[in-house]
Image 1 (cartoon, rainbow, N blue to C red):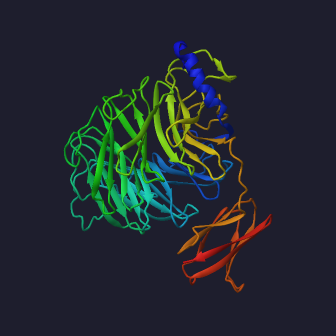
Image 2 (cartoon, rainbow, N blue to C red):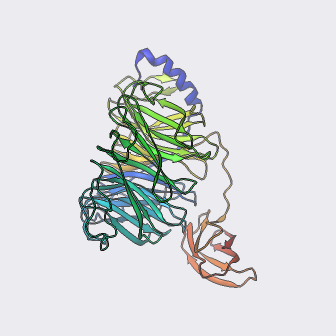
Image 3 (cartoon, helix red, strand yellow):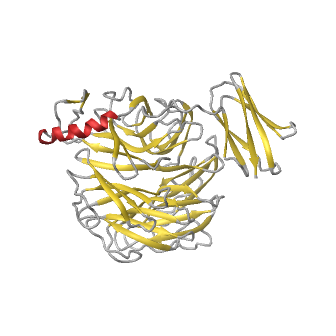
Length: 540
C-alpha cells in the first residue's frame, strides 16, 4: 500500500497517528448466509446502538426472521457490548433498502429508505412508480406505529431522514418524477415537475405522518441529495452532488465533472442561499451538518486538483475532502486526507469538545510485503481491497489520530460515531472472511461492527437509572444502566401514591406514558432481582 519513495515520509505521519491509535475493544459480524448491507448506525441513550440496513438472507446465521421478498429493511438494537437486545425486519415482495434511521422524541425510531414493493407482507401500499420513499415509525421496542409510501411515477430514493423541532419529520432524497395526477386523492404523490434528470426532493411530514409540504430543487442534469438536517433557525441544510449548469433552481455554474451542492432552506422550504463547491474533476459530497458554532461541516471525496474552490490537490486517486463553512456557506478552512488509491468519506460527527470523527474506507494501492513502522505491521492487502478508515481531527482540521481496520476482503464503512461510554463505533459492511481484525463471518456480506476504546479518556461512571426525555410531555423512556432478569417499574407522585406499575423482563429501555398525568414531578422506581434505583421525572 506504500511506495518506497514515500515510505519514510509516511512513517513520520504514522508515528504521530500510532501514538494515539485506539485499541479494538471488540468486533462482531451480524447476518445470515447470504447478504446484508449496512447503511446507517446511531447511538442510543442506554449506551448501546442500533444498526440499520437491508438483508436478503433467510432465518440463519444470527438472523431471526425469514426473508420476505428480495432485500428487506433490517434493524439490530444492540447493547454496549455488541450483544442483541432485539432485531426486526420489514419488507414487501420486491427490493426494500433502509438507508437512514433517527431516534424520535418519544424514544422510538423513524426509518427512511426506498421500496419497489407493492402492497404485500409488511408493505401497506402499492408502489407508485419504479421505487418510492418508504417511511416507518417505530416505538422504543421496535414495534410499528405507522408507515407511509411517498412518490411519483418515476424513481424516488430516500437517503436521509430526521425528526424536526415541531415533532414532524424531514425527508431528503432524489426524484426523477413529474407531477402526479389527482393530488387530492393522492396526497403522497409528487406536486412538482422534474427540473432535469434527477432532482433533490424534500418532503416535510407532520408528527402523525401526514403530508405538510414538499419541494423539488434541481438544475438541468443530475442533482442527487445525500444529506438533510434541520438548522438552529428552524430551516434546513441540504447537501448533495450536482453536475448541472446554471439552470432551474441552480444559480452557480458547475466547476468540473460534478461538485458539492449545498442549499439552505427556511422552515417553509424556500431557498435562502446556495453554494457550489468543487475543483476541476469530480467531487462527491456524502455528509453535511450544522456545527455548534452555527456554521457547517461538509465532507466527501474528491479527485480534483487545487483549482476553483479546492485549495489542495488530491494526491493519488480520490481523497477525503472536508470543509468547514460559516453560517452563510463561506469557507473557514478545508483539508484533504489521503490513505489509499481511492478514499471514500461517508460519515462526519462533531464531538462535544468541537473535534470531529470522520469515517470512510480506502482502497489499497498495491500488493506489498508487510513492513513495520514503530512496531506496527502495515497492511499487505491485495490491490483494490477496501478497509475501514477512522480519523479524528481537531476543530481546525488537524489530525489527532487515524486508524485502519479490516480483513483481507472488502470493507465499506458507513458510520463512525462516539458512544455514550466514550468509545468509538465503526459500522459498515464486510465481504471478508475471518482474517486480520475480523474474527468471524456469517455469509457472503455481513454487517461488521468494531468498537474502539479511547485510551486517552477515563471511563465515566454510569447513572443507574435515567429518564429521556426529561421534562416529558407524552412519553419518557426510563434507561436502566445495569443488567437484570426480572423486575418492576412503578410511578409515584410526590405524596408517595403508586400510580402505575409494569413488569420488566430485562429491558434496558422502558417507555412510560405520562400524557394522562397532570403537570408536576413524579418518581419512577425500578426494582429488579439484581439492583434497584429511581429517577425523578418532570411532566410538562
